[in-house]
Length: 531
Image (cartoon, rainbow, N blue to C red; front, side, top):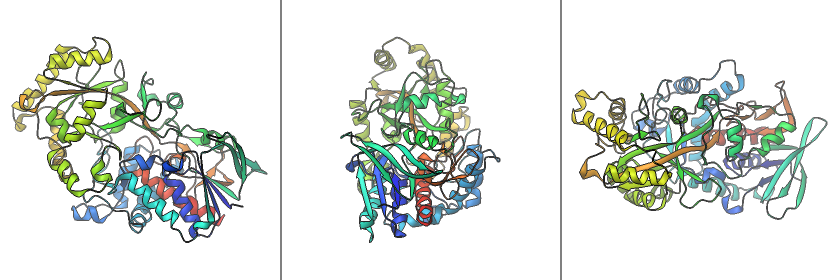
């Protein structure tokens, strides 16, 4: 008989299993997906992790401390001082991520790209004071494979049983204690009922369930858009949130989500509404459905992802366009995730340097050839005609687009001394950091005939991560409405809002998702081992 059941085979579940095996426990891990997808959404991710005080930071001349990181975290997330557990988890993560995430991963063979990225710098709300986004050399795929290999090579591997294709529907309880779970085989339909000393829920969030995303849509984002693409896990449906709630667990901050404003349809979809999250080029013009520049504050990525979503959702039709040319796209266009970053994923240093220095020509060809949301034109008239043909109406105005592009280019022609455009000022600012200088054009005009052809990308809101979820204490024990732990029940990772039911608040400092899953999974495993 297993002493602990872990529900979910993502990074949090794997880390919990490792801690339990270290403690000599007998573990049963249930995952709804197939064996080849072991590792969950992390396996498909870009693999960035929020770390503080690292060798990579010191080599780049970055002075960082847990105190500074916590101040940034609380300010950016607008955490309510009275919200005890999210604040406690934010403090725990910033204090412990160096040793319990970074050093722990390095000891298991995980390495990082030399220069940390600087994202979520903050716009109207302060964000990261310094670069902290450490990209795993090999992306999230390498992270998952390294941890799976550690699990498979564990000296007590015989104490672990893994069953795939198992959909847990409910938790078993008796005398106020969680004693196991029941469910059904995803493919064979066979019912199962399993008991154990305790259960760890690590089944992810609910952002793969678009109807539930709409149900919990935050009031700051107005009404949900007609089109929301799915960038989450296909099985992140909130089923285990319901099971925990039925067992007495408290769900909190469900309207706090981390969605993105630049989603496009996946050329080879593997689930309904499958989307890709574009890393929006900073030198592109971000336009509304008519072709007007969104503003008055121009939209530029890397400062406040949540605000980008809010601004697009505030427009009449709640989708947008980005307008650029081939030169901008080759230097700045990127797609989040392991799939479209093969040089990093496959750890090919020369290819990585080639793309960094000469641009992602292959990605430009891939997306313009295969993604239906990309349109190319020799001039503005041809581009606008193709944009309207794609959307099936005549909404995009050639006059509006011409006014936006010619006005922007005229600003560039005046010279940097006289730039009075906030987008150009922010481009100048980000280029001070060497990690961004190589990937950001130096004031590239849109209508430059040498930089063509022109490119427009139709972008939708894409659902990604749940920042709220099951409320837990610092031992990952699930709490009831009165704040008391439910015996035998733990939660970790995205299911728990990455810790405490929402340790990020309204906004997340990127990289704290994978990091939160690692720390939370480890703490849940340690706590369950001593229960």
